Length: 215
Image (cartoon, rainbow, N blue to C red; front, side, top):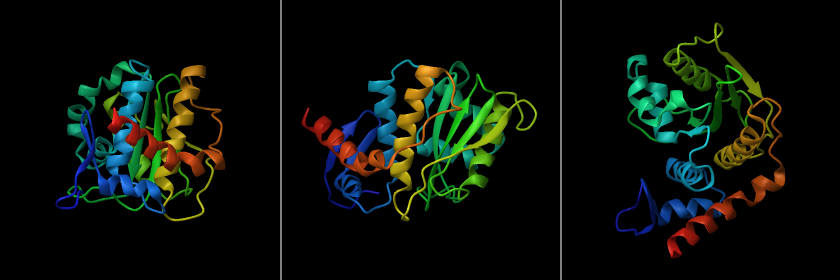
């Protein structure tokens, strides 16, 4: 949440990035919904426009996870979810419908060709319950129940060594998975994120935001 009186660094379509948001990228800080949501919107609009991937921001993911099953279509229909072959969804462990954020991020990926959900967690097992809850709701929405027409799988992930880089791992995993999907039309077999990717990701995203702001 923006601090009173601080200025907007970047207005990018549906995202407003404030000074306090940008400061999170200097580290060591936990990344918030704003930074992760911006990055997905940038990928969707600039790097992978009109692709087979549905990029779902963290605010929508949180609503999907906590809303009643009957409301799922209200969030996914406008995104044309059923027209896409894949979806990437950053999710957190927050259980409060009225609150943003949480304490841990992981990534859930849906693959229609493989009839599977893939969970990628840089702190293995931490978000399993939340990922399975979200996958269950979406599988019902698409008419394939978990364990019946749709599988839930856990993908190996490079593990974080601190308590604040989970959001950075999510951004790196999204990069890896998106490029792998477009090349192979599947999720299984994707390479692990490497340490060097994680080490430079905060700087890359900060430079991206500052570059867009200048232009």
